[in-house]
Image (cartoon, rainbow, N blue to C red; front, top):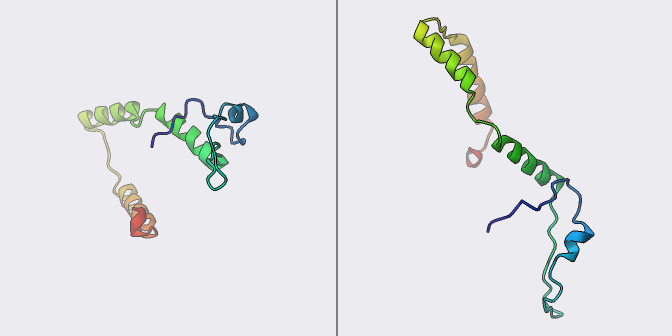
Length: 104
């Protein structure tokens, strides 16, 4: 199922009367089966959608930093700090150790 978010109100507010008015009114409904024509999105879902849109506009790679490291490597001036690498690995391992296997 695909969700079109182009006309979605991401303010976190419930659906407006205008949105309700745009739903089909001529759908036959019997007493035992009613069709839901409105979907509510929580403020958390709204925030996640805005965050996704903001992140999609940014590059996943910091090209400036990549270029600086490449120049330092080429010049032979790049220094590896083994303590920082070890602390980062330990921190990552501890964080992953707290997750259940299904979350990884």
